[in-house]
Structure formats: C-alpha cells, structure tokens
Length: 343
Image 1 (cartoon, helix red, strand yellow):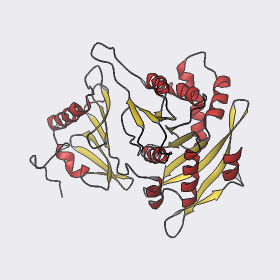
Image 2 (tube, one colour; image 1 turned 45 degrees about the horizontal axis):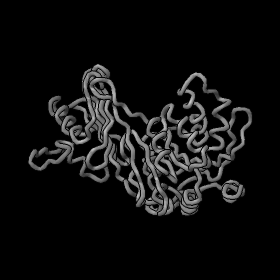
Image 3 (cartoon, rainbow, N blue to C red; image 1 turned 90 degrees about the vertical axis):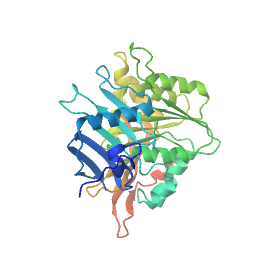
Image 4 (spheres, rainbow, N blue to C red; image 1 turned 120 degrees about the vertical axis):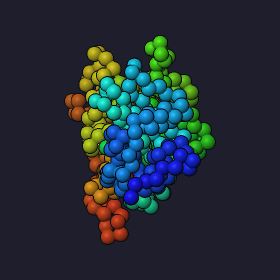
C-alpha cells in the first residue's frame, strides 16, 4: 500500500514524514524521485512512495534553511544536521548523473546510555563495566566500525559515562553528539562562503579546542589530516575519544597510521607509529550481522609498544556468538583486562 501524503499533516519532512515517524526505520534515501528506499532492521527495501523532482528539491531546500548550509553548483555536496537530530547528506548533478541523491540517517538510538546499549545486547555486562571504567580512568578510546554500525551512538554513550566534573569539548563536521554532561562545548565545521573564504575545517577546530581548557577532547569522526592534530593533542596528556571507519579494530590502528600522512610530505610512518602507540589506549570495534543486529565484536589494547612501524596490540574481548537469549558472548584475553589498567 502506498503511503498517503497529506500536506496539512506533514511537518519538517513533507512526504517523508511518514518514514521519519516510524521508530523502526533507520535511514531513508532517494536515488531518483521514483526510487525511494528505507533501511529497517539493518536491511534495505524500496518503498511505494513516488515523488517528482520539484518536490524533492523543495524538500531539501526547506531542510537546509534550518541548517544554514549551502548547496549549489559550486558546492554540490552538503552534510547537515536536521531539527530532530537526524543527519542529511545530498549530492546534486553534475556530481550525480541526473537526479539529486539524498540520504537521511535517523539516530534512533540517540541519547542511549551504556546501560541502555547493554540492554539492547550491543555488548555484555562485563564489557559495559570495562569500557565505563576505561572512560572514567582517562583512557583514550577509538571506536571503529562500518557505516551505520552504531559508532556515534556508542561514542555518545561513552562520553556521557565520563565523571560529571569533566569539561568536554566535542569537534564534529556536523553536530551529532549530545553527551549528558553539564560542562560540554560543541564545535562544528563551517564551509566557505560564496567568495570562497570563511571555511573552518576540523584541523582548526581541534587546535581551538585545546585552548578551551578541556579535560577530554572528542572528535566525532576521523577521516583525513585532522587525525594528526588529534594524535598530537592526545600525546600532550589530554585524554580523548573518536570514531573511525574500518573493518576491524586492528585495521583501525593501521588506518590511523596512514591518515596523518595526508597532512604533508614531511610526515612519515616512522614519525606517526610512536604517536599512535602512545595516544590510543583502547579500540572498540562495532559490527552488524546479516540480520541487522549491531554488537561490539572486539576490544583491543594498544600497549604502547612498537616493532619497526607496527603498533603492537593485544585482544581483550573477542565476540564469539549470541547465546540462546540473544546476548553476545565473548572470549577474554588472558589477564588482558586487568593488565590494561595497571601497565
């Protein structure tokens, strides 16, 4: 049955409001006005909703009015936060072949605590206690995983688990984090204006964040050269957290050794390896299976030692399977969980 669009009943999202109101729908994307998809339970499906190009463009323009972000031929991409906290990404021709490509990622688990995520079987009670202790004792944590695995949700829960007297500064491309802490400052990047000036990149924000007396610095997502600035900040004795796209915890460390090379030709692997080894203490990798279930699949300890340019790591918890009750079970590294806090 096709969704019925009533303009008088729609709110911010016009014809997409029916999908935004469904708490089980995680993401909506438009490939063409006639091909609109949703993700539900980790699986994608095409909808029966059919629009026209003008409706799609008017919807995007209305949403961007709230965010203050630009979309035109000189800026054919946009990444913006929407009024309900969802994240909007749009690409337009000539970057796309013909139609506007639109993604709206809903944060259906936004604001969840570590206890909430444990109840949702994202991890076991043992891991919940371990990562809370790691956050509370000033360990620097990297959350890795694929797109949509729940990295930002877990990062937000970890930051919210910090001591209440913490002063946290978050640095993001688009506001997504909302920690439950009384002393928190959120910084967001800014695109260049019509004259091509005024851009504020992540690298600049990280440097400014260090001047704001943080007890912890949080980088929403590490993608490029800003990784170098984060590593230098964490090596100054300031604990922090971040997310990164990767297929495994070990790969996350390898990627973190590569991304800083984008900062300049004078940056080498020999320089970066010790930075990574001493800046990051723990990597938490989040995965999802074919049924759409999200879970922490591994925790590794970055010991601080290096062999050549290889950063040494040690497994602390490794996912085994879900038990009969649907709770994840893990294999523990021999004594690693206790040595992590004492070495």
